[in-house]
Length: 340
Image (cartoon, rainbow, N blue to C red; front, side, top):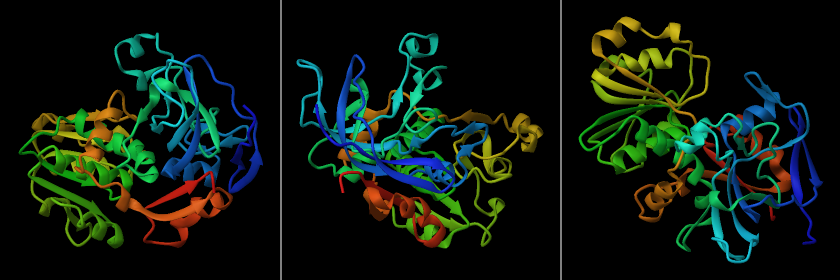
């Protein structure tokens, strides 16, 4: 198939170049997807600013973006997807045959490829090749933006799944970024009776309070000790000391999910508190096997992802999209459109 494939390519810190790349070759089981919308994630921004996250460095030019939706433009005859099908793209490509993959824990696959995780190119291109098994059809009621944002919704849903949030639970979400706002909505959707989101940003707390069943609370105005006790804490900020401080708000046998990526050494945790209250700590790394459930929540109107979008950019303005959080305090989620 002959077509252009304009992409936004990161060469180094704050160095994006718009280039025409070769259309990728399909591997067995792949489809070609024309990318319609890509959400900008905090990890994209971190790579854009520093060309690395922790020990993972960009040592060759890379295409960013892993929150994506699109339309199938090339597929195998008789496959599960047809040309013209709109899809939400789960960014995993696991090996499929290791112990973790066989057990359904493919997010733990040692050789998994993940869009925009070096050295794998991401979705900020007009055409990408992805496994058909990780492309999920969406209904006409779901916009391109919403289909792209199934990815962060899946993270929030996975945190709720890992911590077994159920009817009657009291839930505290730390951090009112996109993942925190979606995790709070999921908690409310599955029946939590109390859902409180805390953050240090007034605009984001105001946003949290717009969602049914969610109470946004500004940290600093109140402390954790004044919030009451919780059955579940979902820590999405990654801020230093956040896990330790939030754990103090847990009731006996409470559960805490570590979602936010930061430098929170276990030495910061109060081990005596964990022992005396028999607390449970859960790591949350991406997700596995829940994209269809996330889409079902979205299509049923149980969560609102569209309201997270505060800024929209064509592909040529990828630099601006990656920088908007530095210039606009009201920015929550930027969307980039590779076809524009």
